[in-house]
Image 1 (tube, rainbow over the protein chains, first blue to last red):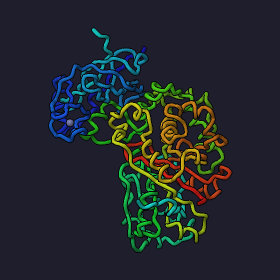
Image 2: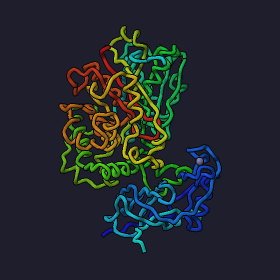
Image 3: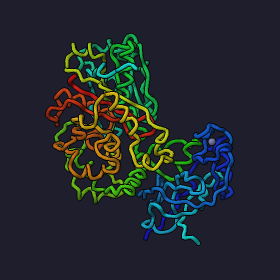
Image 4: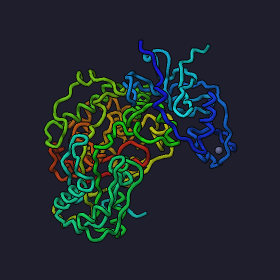
Length: 143
Length: 396
Ligand SMILES: [Zn+2]
């Protein structure tokens, strides 16, 4: 068994702008939020200035349950950073309580061999540089 | 609508040698571009001073982090006057489509001889880890933290979804790698000339499951240039004209930034993003998949070849695996694919080797000549839009 691990946060940097700040500020507090159009109520990810359906700029930031489903995944041989070499698992996760919009993340915890398309996952948090946190996902055994 | 069908032709093609990654150093990008253009002029039988147009793609970047500058190129080559210089946006998705940009300029009377060129030198930054190396930006904060270092890692997720949805097997990806390698064995220009077996393929580490090293294209340096002009003028030049029957670029919002955002609808997620462009290309050409004699399919990663074969209608959606496993893409198959060994086994110059090979096939001078080839399909890379395709032929 090889346990799926998070990438070392000290190598991860993000930049933030007007559209994306609410997502990352909530993430700092370990809350997963997504932008929903203030007019037509459809979700989009990542956050962008306009709603692609109705072109509205109105946004409601909605707190989600943190539950997700693996839409696709890969197992990479080694992290793209200097330092320890270990396999890790990038995933595309769809968020069922946000119209199925997707996040690009990692699965951590549990055996790498158990990761599969359709796997139920729940959000966890990986602290990175400058005090930010990025959402990662753990197997959700429904407890 | 102006019908550009067969109104322009490729009349010259030229290239530098192909080198392994970084080995073209210390040549500059301008020097490599110049060498390729001069070779293309020699091939066409024109003076470099007659060049008056540039139609680039990939935003005129030379790979990522370097650029091709028309002003510098004409300064050193002594080209007296430029009447058209433009680029398709995006990246390697536009390679074949740049022939359409050239055709637009030529048919509008904006230039007489238009160069399309790409040079690649990976001395400072290799493309294989380009995303891990790029500076953080707000948009890629939703991508970069997941640790997907390069394009192959990104496209592994598309390949996995295709396998899940349609039952596609790694044997199909292997067949693309092996058939390309077979085509490269006898080519002096190819950087990989030793046979690849299925056993070796399956022994290789999975860099980004389901992809192993043989599913990734080579990381190489070099430059390739082609020259286009109006078809009427082309008849008087050195070689038999290779007519640009049609070229199309663009793509749908559903594909959009593709593997940089991953929010494509399911069917488009497990695709090459080319379906809408392919449909438009065939309509412009008045031809269909059954008319294609040789396919020059952009092969940065094996699964993306398979998905392009579906999007260009050579088999049904989801049937790409069984199609390639049937042997159809072998040199003696129903659809000979990349007889030059492609980017997987010859060299990777961001799509230009495919155009070069299409020209040689349609002149009848290719090393692995497909007997009687009259119509060739060239595609640009499955990538954030634009993606593109072109249909070329030698007989009107
Ligand atoms: Zn809306």
